[in-house]
Image (tube, rainbow, N blue to C red; front, side):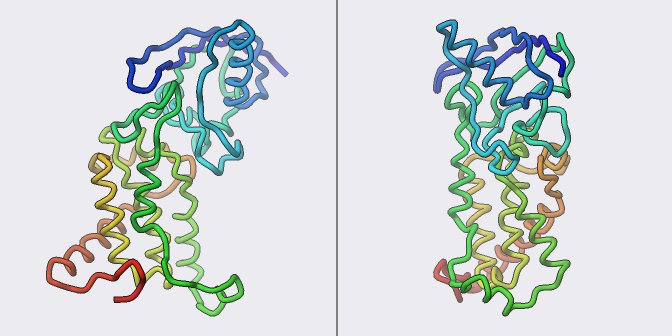
Length: 262
C-alpha cells in the first residue's frame, strides 16, 4: 500500500449563494481507498479541526445508485471510463497531484450544497411517463410473453441507466436526451410497453423541455461520460418515436391515456 499526498481544490457553496474553490491538503491517503473514502478521510480531519465537512451525495457505493455524481478534473465521475465516482480508486492518481472537484454543472441541476445538486428534474421526467400503468402479473407471468433475445438484450442495455446525470454534465447544452432516451427506450422496446408508447414518449420529452434541459447537438459527449456506456443510438430511437407520436397527435390520432389503452 502506498500513501498519497494530494492537493484538492473543492467547490464549496451554500444554496443560492456564490461558490468558490477551497484549497484542501489531503495527506497520507491510501492508494487503495475509493474516491469517496478519500473524501471521508478529508471530512474526518476537517471535523477534527472544527471546520465544516465537504457535502457530497452517496448511497450504495457499488456503482448502482448513481448518487455519487461529481466532476473530477473536468470529467463527470473522473478519468476512468465506465466508472462511477464510488468505484474510482485513488491508485488512478499520483502523489502531489492537484485534483479539482466540482458539482455537476447544469441550469436544471441547481447546487444544493458543495458537491450536491438537485436532480429531482430526472424524477419528474420519469414520473411523466417512464412506467407501465397496466398490470403485468407476477414474475411467472413474464414467461407468457415471448421476447426475442436481441430485443431483451437491447432493453436491458437501456435499463442499465442509473440516472446519475453525467450525460447532462458532459453536454455543452446540458441536454438530458441520453437519460430520457434510455428510460423511454427500455419500455418502448418491449411488448408490455407498446400500448402507452406514444403517450409515454410525448410526455417524457415535453417534461424534459419543461425542466430546462438543452438540445442535443449529436457530439456524443454524453455517451463518452456515461458510467454505464449507454449508447446514443437510443437518442436516435427516441427521436423516431417522438416524430411518429407527434405526427399521430397532430393529425388527430388517439393518444393512449395513462390508464392504458386507446
